[in-house]
Image 1 (tube, one colour):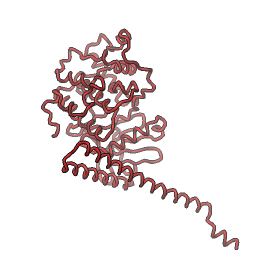
Image 2 (cartoon, helix red, strand yellow):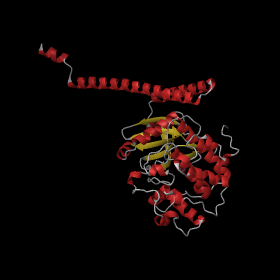
Image 3 (cartoon, helix red, strand yellow):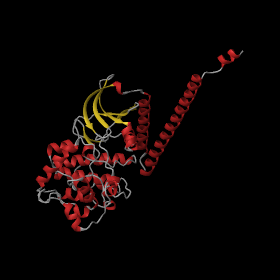
Image 4 (cartoon, helix red, strand yellow):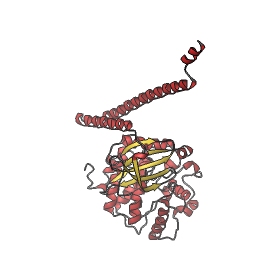
Length: 389
């Protein structure tokens, strides 16, 4: 009888398997419920935005249908059980603190992608998990011709993988290193496309905070898309010394113009030499960060428009507006921008271009874009731009 009882009693291994199966099923249903709740919240957010904008019925239907298609695409991607072995790794096109970006080919289809491979332990150690999740979310949710498209995301024990569209044109940083400065027409084109890209993520309630030439990618036709390919660790402002606005004039004078005897062309050469060193660096650059971010005052979407002004300045002048020989001096100049913003006289800037930069590199309340993009799009610098084409 005791033997029969022993046979009827489940073994410890069987108990463990049953517990694991129970836990798996519970987690699966919990994940499904969480996913359904997230879909519901996304739909409510879109409906609220449609209501706020008082759109015509036809446009409302188009937006809702597009959202439903995005949700179907997202579910399809979730069902596909892909892993790194499904892709053939090719050339490395970016490297940074958390991993690398590599051109790869999907073995089954032969299609070319850019795969971002991030080391999970390093992201946890540096507290960047939320930053990467935010990037994955914005790439998955913002379906816009000016934002890089995310096709797949998956992970293994060691790495997180983001598989995105591959843009063969490189990035604006490489373009600027090749050309030094851009013409007024080239600048107008790239700045206008950046406006549309920033506008698209703001409409989805995302703030980029790290817009810089490295993150402006170019497709084969020269059109611009926004991403975060640099893999450089974002500048950790908590590690910087305390920054103060309205520093004494004599203190600022020492940093106001790095290499005070340099001509504009010498300053350009100095920046380009350092820029090349930064290309594969794991250290973030503060040159494009808004003062309110550095001062840890709290910030909103307006910080991305400051970054646009700094990039536009570099396109026309050849180096960022607050460039210094070290990042701390750059940060001090940014937070004291009133005393430190200079436009070199030997660079003959079009009046409308300088006016636009002055209205982007300014106080938050006065900054163009802070009250919507229409005031920005209607600026004289963009005269002749067809925003709908």
